[in-house]
Figure 1: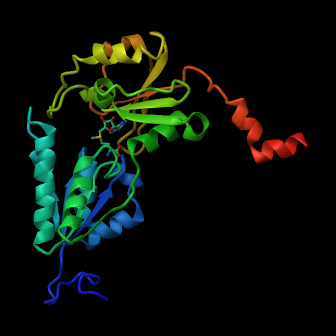
Figure 2 (figure 1 turned 60 degrees about the horizontal axis):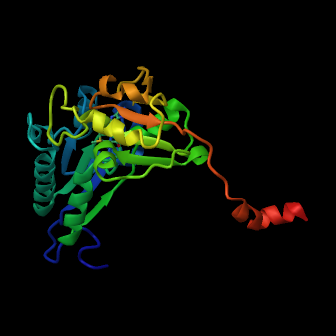
Figure 3 (figure 1 turned 120 degrees about the horizontal axis):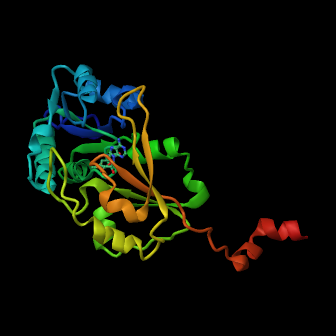
Length: 275
Ligand SMILES: C[S@@+](CC[C@H](N)C(=O)[O-])C[C@H]1O[C@@H](n2cnc3c(N)ncnc32)[C@H](O)[C@@H]1O
């Protein structure tokens, strides 16, 4: 076993490490057993969660080590700057030799860049770093809206990325647009975001869908016992649909897939059925 395999340096000091865990969308109920174990065992438990119950749950896991990173968000401050500060704080703790756990809401690596980047940098400096999977908003959407991606396929995009980067949609698949409520706004807001670019998003969606195609504005329940919000809207009403920073847009398929008979006929199973 090398000196780093047992988490200690050559002079016997504990080496820092980083583990990213997710609290799920509903911390009460969706925290995994392995996430709880890591949160409890950590010397330092950094966290950034979106609601007071989740915060209470996280703090109760590690009374002494828990430290919120939410204060890095500030009104109108670019989110990229906040994320960089969070990454720096994670690395600081690791470099100080602490077994560091970072708990983020949802899945820590789904539409959540800081944990991925902190892990990449920590590994680059020779520290152990890893991410555990968790329940994301998309997982909740599949359950609440009764969608199995196996039936339609599924394309998931960050809404602004979809709008500005010429992403292409296969309209026979389910399309999920994340961060629809912060469209085109790179800053943090405690209140409403500036989504005045919504008509531009609509313009792009209209390249693929009719104006009255039904989409769903979805918000998973954050508290146990509460119901999700599943609001069908015609696409043309998107600019005044009242999406929030928590909303995810789900666009069901507009057509059946165009099968390829030439491939189908060459499938071994199909050939056997014909004999
Ligand atoms: C920065 S991302 C964080 C995603 C999170 N890491 C996860 O695993 O779901 C924020 C986006 O996630 C989606 N989201 C977060 N909470 C949600 C909720 N309760 N219901 C539906 N979508 C949600 C929205 O698209 C929101 O703009």
